Image 1 (cartoon, rainbow over the protein chains, first blue to last red):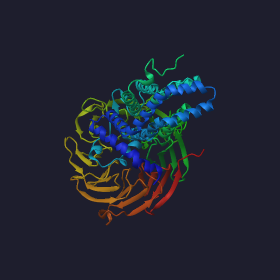
Image 2 (image 1 turned 120 degrees about the vertical axis):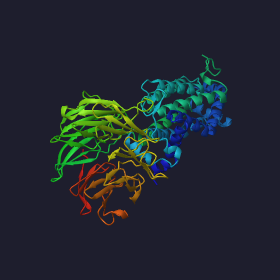
Image 3 (image 1 turned 90 degrees about the vertical axis):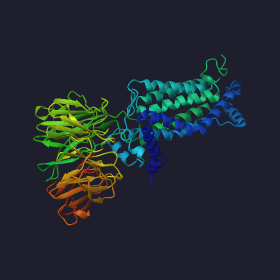
Image 4 (image 1 turned 90 degrees about the horizontal axis):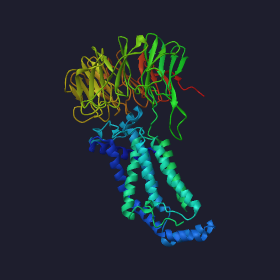
Length: 249
Length: 391
């Protein structure tokens, strides 16, 4: 069995069939099915998200100490890294730990993209291919073919009005801003600022190229992330103006 | 450490985007144009957006006409330009060959000169597009009927350079446009019949394109194009049944199978002959069904999905499964009702296109972009021709 076959068997086809079944259950609205699936994915990945949030919170709590180290060893990057690693180790925090949920979502992105293109039968090949991927569930059989319309969107095509691009970019920026700690080191601060802007800009741009169904997933996922972050971390984090962690000039 | 985080994040995003772009969801349409034979010339649409003419006697390429290319707009693994996809089997009428195209921007109909493939006219003109074209066109009394992905049926006068006679948006009960009209139209007794993905059969006036009084609605959508035989429409549905619908009736004459659905969709249009419906199914079976009653006469399990419609050549019934095995049934032979093929001929390439049969030869375009010509009597591939231009 090839990698592609295993991929479809384990990830691709289940997501496709669940999406189609959800669409039928939700009155034939494929957009609602994507939103429901996003919620399900976020629920399934909750243990990882919780760890991510805990790591973020721990990193936030450590900021005064980190800034102190940055002031102390700002001119000696090697020493600074060593001291910071020591600090992370003592606190039991893995600074990369907060990024794993993103990695977990990778296959979901890919599978969702494939599922959207196949389920909406954007090309005749996709529709024919769908025949070989559907489970024999009644709920799936009755749902085909799906309607791609949702609100102002054609879920199989990019949003022509850029509204979704702004929502994706804006929510991603807000989510990143909530968790990105400011740095005393001007170089790191500049990089972080650039990253906080670059990623939302990149995803906003991609929203203009990819089917809006996938962008809908990104937008809903970001919004859920912001809400979760708000309640678990107890506020707007670094997004809040006048955050106690903002560096004093 | 912040750098590590940023790099990690960037790598994850790039991996995701590359994965989406490379693994993809089959977003690029490839086309599965069938083959037509006319006056000893084989006409076919290729996988790289060309229409070709091959001399069947000398086996030489007469001409090759690329239709159109366009930027893909894709990422990473996509090429800079993508040829238009051709799903419609070329139709030859008089000195012209007609073909529709499918691009991500939309579709267009072309009339090419039969002798050299020169574009004589196109519809719409001036670089505009209508909805992408998938269904085979039907020509009747000099009018070409085209269905397109913009849920519209077009009537074009082929004797007046494709002048638009009318266009008719097919509406559903709520007055909303359907998203796609991929099934082929069929002209019968002054009406154009089209089936839709939301389970309608509509009849349109050939004169004006207006919806006629009768229409038919099924809960499930229709997967195949309609076929008309003695005022009954036969077509397959996404609910894995084949339906017979008497024109003017609100209820199906029958559905096959009556109870439990078949193993998959009846994707290909059936063929009807002497009161028997021959229908290929994606479950790998070819069914012979009594046209009046829906009773199964026999079935044959090819073992692989049947995507292409069966074809009759005299008293020979020919079907090809997706793996490229040609099955020939002699309808007058003793074995016909026992569902035993008279000939079984593998061509060695996948087949999704419609094919044609002429004077003992079956002309098939494989998914490997080759034309295969199968000699039914000898039970083997007589000759083949590559459609891919090197370099």
